[in-house]
Image (cartoon, rainbow, N blue to C red):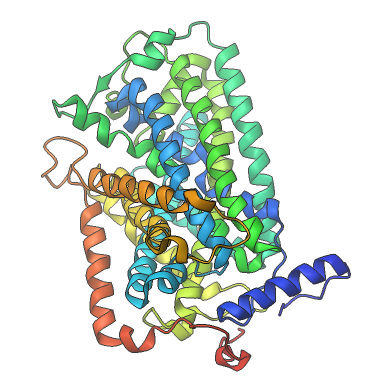
Length: 516
């Protein structure tokens, strides 16, 4: 079952045996190393959500799309909506704890077509999330070097830093799930203690703080659009993008002990903990803004700290001075690096599983694992695709928010399809150990309604006029391209090659999962 030596703990061996039997009953022979604890499973989702990544990289966007009022109350509302999605996904995860997760659940509950489209949407979202995380980290690294050394990278230097971050994450992911688990454990405490540290500094050090009225009711519009409703609606991207990545708990379920219980818990816990901590972080930064009506998003162009790091960097510089700003920026950068590492680990498992079922061009290559039971080919594919997705940043100023929108509109439908299909089954759905009882269908339908609204919102123009080469939101183009590619491949080969198991199978079915 595992590429590592067996445990000497009888209880652990019993748990692993039960997990292996459940996986075989689903239809898969275990090939990954099951060495992740429940805390580690929660940690990877929490690390990918990474409030110190999503909140900080889109803070300036939030200031321009509704300002504090939308940032605070939008955060509360979207967090509750995302929690509905997470609850619904967690219930289905308890029944089907596999690396493929979302697409496999959709296949079992709705058929091959549902599984196929869910898998491709999940892929698009994961590539977008990785690009958004690591490009944002590169921008914060650039902001730090600008403050500390006077060197701020231009767009070509930024792409180079981005590529270096991706490669670093790829290399670290080759060493096995225990290394990933260790970094995720460190990441949880780094995020929680880091947020507490940043919030404490922002409340104690500045000589001036904004009023509660400013933080909770002030509206700002830097988009060029006149409608406050439209601007506020697209401003929800801040929270929608940040609270993604919790499917990692499901993708790592084949490497988690007691997965049918601990993977669902990991999903739900990562959302509500991130929601609370993220709200505190956003409010702390808003209180620390210096000046009565200062719009940091609009000051980005002349700041010398371009990109997504502009607004937080300027707030910290104005409120704390350069020394403190440098320290807090380093805290944010480390959190972002942990986030990107976890995101690539999650994406690699999804690609591995999708290829295991014959869904991707070149599936035999992407489903291979190395001697540490890591799908390294799949992992490097994720690295390359994330890099390609961020390349438009060389030509358009809207590239970063478009990348974050790509991640959100890819992942959100993939998250909610299993819950929608479960809700459609009603009482005929065979619930797992972790379940929502009679509330399952209602929660699944409510989450589905929100996702439809969310996808429409994040495909809309984000800056007026929205039709020029510099301001165009290419997220719907990326979505359309992936749907077109998946449709073409389905007609060409997918209908025959895509074959998730329908039930228990013999181990020999997956004997060609080569170890390299």
